[in-house]
Each structure stands twice: as C-alpha cells, then as structure tokens.
Image 1 (tube, rainbow, N blue to C red):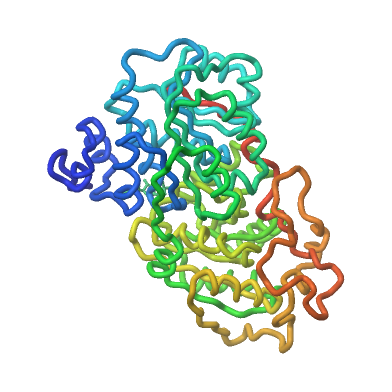
Image 2: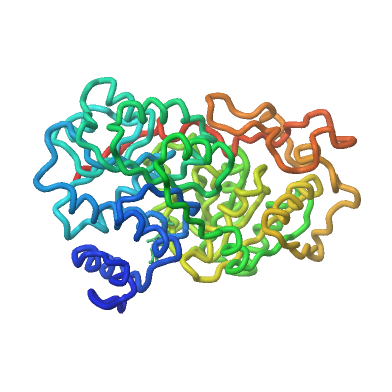
Amino acid sequence: MSQTTTSGGPFADLKLIDPLLRAINDQGYDKPTPIQIKAIPPVLAGRDLLAAAQTGSGKTAGFALPLLQRMNELYSGKPRPGRVRALILTPTRELAAQVEESIHACGKYLPMTSAVVFGGVGIQPQIARLKRGVDVLVATPGRLLDLHGQGVVDFADLSILVLDEADRMLDMGFIHDIRRILKVLPEDRQNLMFSATFAPEIRELAAKYLNDPQSVDVSPKFTAAETVEQRVLRVDQSRKAELLSRLASEGDWKQVLIFTRTKHGANRLARKLEGDGISSAAIHGNKSQSARTKALADFKRGAVRALVATDIAARGLDIEQLPRVVNFELPNVPEDYVHRIGRTGRAGASGKAVSLVAGDEVGLLKAIERVLRRDLDHEILPGFEPTPGEGAGKTPGGGNRGGGRNQQQRGGSRGGGGRAPGRSSGPSAGGNRSRSGGGARSSSGGSGNRSGASGSSRGYRSR
Ligand code: AMP
C-alpha cells in the first residue's frame, strides 16, 4: 500500500488539488515519475505540450491528472447532450480502454464523466452514451469520425485535445483521420501530444497544430537501457522455440511477454509452448476483442505464464512490473525494441529482456545498439550454437531458414496497418547475397488491421 499523503507529498508539490491527490493515493503511487514531473506543471498552466514518453513511463497519469484539474477549473455542471469537453485520441482500442480506465481512476473524486469509443463493436450504445454528453471522451480515430459523421457528437464546447502515441497513429496510417478530426475542433483549445519519438513527421504535426508548445523529453531510451537487464542469445531461427521453452522451464518463468513479428508466428509459438507445458496465450490483431481481453486478464492474474504478442497488439497493454520480456524476433524498427523492453522494469523496477537473435537479424541488432548507444553482449548457450555462417551480417529477412511458411508473409499486410518492410534499419536492402525472398519476415507483426477499428464485445464504457 502507498504511503502517499494528501498534503506535502511530492505529488502535492505539483500543485494538484486534493481530489486528485486522494485518487493518486488510492492507486498507490508514491511519487511522480519523470514525465509527470515535467508534464504536469505546463499543462496546469494551460500550455500546449509536446512530450516524448512511452508506455511504461507513467505518461497516462501525466496527462490525465492535469487535464482533469484544468477541466475542473474550466467547467461547471454537466456537459450538454452530445457535447464533449476533452478528447483523447489513441491508436488502438486497448490503449483507448486503458486510458479511459486511468481517467476514471484519477477522476474518481471529481464530478467528471468519461467514456470510450472504438470500432469493431456496435455503434448504437456509443451513440446513446454520447447523447448524454461526456466530459472526457477517449476514442480511436476511425470510429470517432463515424460518430461525428452521424451527427451524434459535437465538439463546440471542447477545450482540450490529447494525441496519445502520436507516432504510432501516424505509423498506422491515421494521419488523414486525425486531420479531419482536427478540422472540426474549436481552434481555441489546449493541445497535448505524446509520442515515443520526435521523428520528423511528429515535429511537422506539432509545428502545424500545437501553439508554442512546451517540449519535454524523458529520454526513455536511456531509461530502458539502464533499468532493464538485456541479454542477447545468438541462435538459429529454427531452434528459437526450443531454446525459449528450455529457458522458461529451467528458469521457472512465471510471467513473460514474448514478441513475435507475425500473427502466425505468435499463434505457432503459443501452441508450441503450451505443448511444452508452459501455459500460453497469443494476442494479436486477428483475435476478437473478448479473446484479447481474456488473454490479458489470464496473464495478469498468473493463469497464463506466457503471453505471445505482436508489437501492435502489445502497445498500451497495462501490465505492471512485468518481470521479463522476450524478443523472439527482433523488430524491424529499432525504436520498437525500446518500446518492447520498456514493458519490463516499469516505473523504476528492474526487469529482464532476452532477445533471441538469428544470423539474419544481426543487422537489426546493430541498429538497435546504435539507438541504445551501447553494445550488448552476445551469448551462445551450449547445445544451441548457431550454424556457422548462418546469415550473419545479411539483410534482415534474407534467411529465415527455419521459418518455413513464414515466407508466405512476403509483402507485408494489406489494410493499411503496417510499416513498409523496407523501413528496417539494418544494412541496406541491397546487401549481398540476400536471398530472393527479401520479405520473408514481413512487417505484419506490427500491422494487422487498424486495431482501432475491429474486434468485438465491449465497445464503450460510460461513467
Ligand atoms: P503508462 O506509461 O501511463 O502506461 O503507465 C505505466 C504504469 O505505471 C501504469 O501501470 C501506471 O499505473 C503506473 N504508474 C503511473 N504513474 C505512476 C507513479 N507515479 N508511480 C508508480 N506507478 C505509476
């Protein structure tokens, strides 16, 4: 239980009001995280914000708390029917649901209402909810536009906009939707933009839509690199599952999040682990919302030891203090490695990250080391020595001998979700002797459908 007091504590130093301090206390937070220390004061002062922070940094409370306090100052009484006072856009339905939970938890002692809307589920309950008016609406872009098109949501009273995980929204192809939404919001509003990186497109978006923003950066790359123990095990692709199974059994791993590139790969690996006596579930864009929710719940309560996920599916999963993360395959984009290992060692706790690296992933590993600004030690475990010359130094995707059917994935996903396979940061695609199926590892692990817009079951929550 937390020792946070409602006065004089570090959160109180941030000039948060008592109902928020009480809610913070209930959540068991002792002290603000770096992003909270940096983000809360400018937001309370009414400034626009451009914040570099990723999942695991405490960014959600970093905007939820000052947003609620601002709203408490700006508004009184209930929102009018159909009106929304603050809007939070997120790339995925999971993140939307978790952000709304956080808003609810932080605002529990304030007379605020919140709701969440995302696609893939019935729209009627969402329409009914919006008709009553909402203080804080959390939404994925596609469904929000749909609702707006139907005339059931009105932004005339809106004063705060949050773009959460803006880089991911751009990656997922939401830029046009975002522009359309921004057009229908009142110009006079406070804008908060959160992004894991300040890539050029993010700066462009910020320059266009933010008004003299305060820029804050908590340098997550170095935080993750410092607090997470990172191991790199060199092993042939074809033997990764066996090695992983061995590590999990011998180490008696109780809870591990495993990243694969593809949905098929996630399913296959979960089945293999299950067959080896390690209870597992896969979570990715092809799974229904209810299946994902169940897998996550089972994992959180320890009924399932291994959760196998693609990058997109894993984004925004709120799993506290995850002890261990495994990169079954390295991601194409080095920043995703930082995201992944950021799932462990959260909020200052230490964690472990293990990467299984095949010969054809060495280029990707180098790119990751450049981002981390440090070299990682490579280990080879007895009995799992990589086949000499197996793809070492080749372009990613050039080998994948053990992957078999994975080669079907060539060309990446359709449907607008994924990154171009060519966006890897390994050696140039012209790399020598790369086998002809250059896309054997597709980017579909990071793609799938635009997960803000599909799924089933619970579509909204109203508070
Ligand atoms: P986020 O980066 O917003 O996804 O938050 C990551 C996790 O950190 C969530 O489980 C939060 O509940 C938790 N968290 C947020 N702020 C704090 C804090 N000040 N102290 C401890 N945990 C926190």
